[in-house]
Image (tube, rainbow, N blue to C red; front, side, top):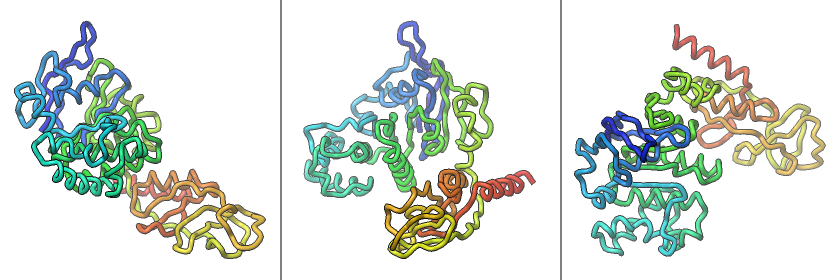
Amino acid sequence: MIGFQDVRKEYGSTVAVHDLRLSLPDGAITVLVGPSGCGKTTLLRMVNRMVEPTSGRVLLDGTDVRELDPARLRRGIGYVIQQAGLFPHRDVLDNVGTVLVLGGTGRREARRRAVELLDLVGLPAELGTRYPAQLSGGQQQRVGVARALAADPPVLLMDEPFSAVDPVVRQGLQDELLRLQGELGKTVLFVTHDIDEAVKLGDRVAVLRQGGHLAQVAAPDELLARPADDFVTGFVGRDRGYRRLSFVDGQLHPQSVDTVVLGDPVSGSGWRLALDTDRAPRGWVPPQSDVDGPLAENHLVAGGSLHALGRPLRGALDAALSAPSGLGVVVDGSGRYAGVVTAEHVLDVIQRERGVRTG
């Protein structure tokens, strides 16, 4: 659907993009990643003609975008940027419905459709009458995604859309994008400088070096396993083996550990895992704890990350390494306690999986 054919962009004597050739598969997320000044945003903005190439062609469904009317082209492409770019003096529903109104849809119908889109991106309908300044950063970004999806465009351009929010909100927005993509199957061109975000979101990852040279394009697992050269190796990081665990599944069989439910008296001498009444993990009771009476939240040590059964092994290893007890907590699909694993346990599973793949 989107293709770059020998695309070059010069600003005076500076070459921002160097004769680049790249095709984006339909219905997939392609991520452009690289250091500052490597031409990522320039390439993305060529697709909707906010930047014109010096030479070469940018194709959309086989048509050079320079043959298309810029305004009509942009109304047919979703565009999400940093900090959402919402209109401050319009409420959320009018922000989301902007593209629909520009396309000739009546305001009432546009607002009705906007309510549906808020639900699609996980926002309650009551936020529709608020203004951008009354929303959190994460909520604003979700509104920006809803606005980009308003006209049901086949193509979605996303320029570092989650970089201005805190890490916890950012992870939630990434998960939300993957959920939406599973439902909608858009052709997405996503720009980031964060390799972890790239390998999490991308079906394909294109690594650019300074001057807009394409260093490598590959699926995330391939990129981490076989970087093309020293530049790609350095950019994806020397801990790429750990990152690659995001793509390694394994059959974990959690062990058991002493548990105690909040509100119950504490007994035992080793680390004990505290659960709530629904058996969801809440934290750890350290050895020789001086809890007097029923266990409360303020008696607990933070428990590290949780690993969900069936998820890639990176999460299991992180859970074990981040837990104060050295025991990574494993939960089922409902968030209930399923057992614990150690780092040694996870590494044994990785070794067995490696043996299966190479045997």
